[in-house]
Figure 1 (tube, rainbow, N blue to C red):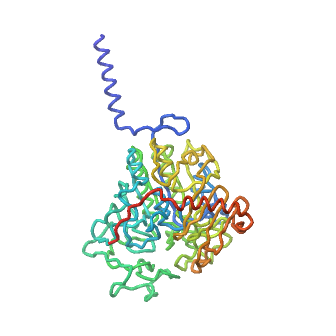
Figure 2: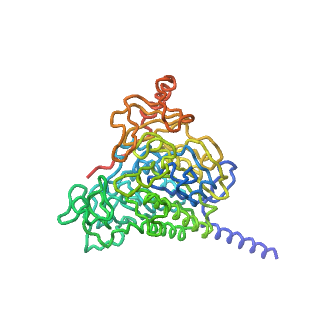
Figure 3: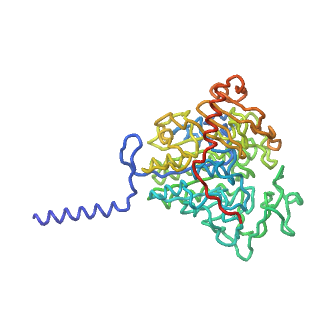
Length: 521
């Protein structure tokens, strides 16, 4: 009998080891030190969505019920920031935790730019991968590919897979730039090698029509800049030849990315995963699926915002159906503020009506004023995060250090700050200050104050009709009293101005991390 008991005990131990060996590593709850399973992490990132473009952020002319569910069920930040007022720098900061102005190449990239992130650099997917996470990106990339002389008919490397992503399905750059193809794990999807792709940003290929020379072949009229190769009736930036079978369908892009994101969740739900789901809306060209055409009454810009909201609702539904919503931290935001006419005539200005994409802020995309970088910012974790509105100052750049803490490690080698308690709604304490950037010019944000140094240059970008924040004198705003930044207090509050200038200089003048530049070939 004694031998039988020992045998039963041994079998119990062996069974316990067998069933636990593949379980994900545990992490400590930040506040209670309670051991929990590591959550999945999903970053949902929109493109050019403004602070006032969501009904949960005050929009009355557009209703975004699915995103509103995240905002109303999680932490809705009123002081949430992208690092920059344009796309590439913000995406760089999000993934690396580094201020983009530290890298001189971190600016809006052409479709043939080399990879901006060094393969030796710390990144968010690398960090999570080291902690046992599966990692993937679906959607817009726009951080460069290869070493600057890409052969699109071979594997394109380095790219997302070389900076921490196990799987990638991306746009090479933006929807309005060539090449107009999807790239899956470095290979152009559906490419017929008998019809090779050629790309140039300098010179057109003989015999290829362009938006400038052949307007009769376009279904969308260009306003500025977008007058080169025509794909699907839409003139683009840059010249492209070949690759017909690989070219995307613009109106199906949202559905395509959604399905890819859903499929990833379904096939990777058994272990912790990090998914960067980077939607293309509402960036130009705005090409809603016929299901959404006319739904907003505001033309294509409004329609694609409603389309994005629907996609997010369907994605959340998938998390729920797969039984993992309660173990998934969702971060929702936008890469920069809004712009209406950004290169095409699409009624964005004419049909705006009473809608204010800026949400009462000043400026917009490309601007140092608040509307350039203050964006919708939401964290949602069903059953873990209690719904609240937070005024904590947070930036997308802070995800690196904050998520490191969440999964049981640390990260202090970048500009990212650990504000995980703010992200989880446990604290109102965010970062003390933040340098924001627009077209290589920088400004300072602190708790309630904004400081913009004097800059030469035009005050307004006439093409997009947005104030840029350039002025011959310094500008100082008390945002607690003047959210629209109408009253410059630089002269009347010299001591506060000096204080802000000192903080700005101390940050902007130091070099916290060195970025290894890739050689341009």
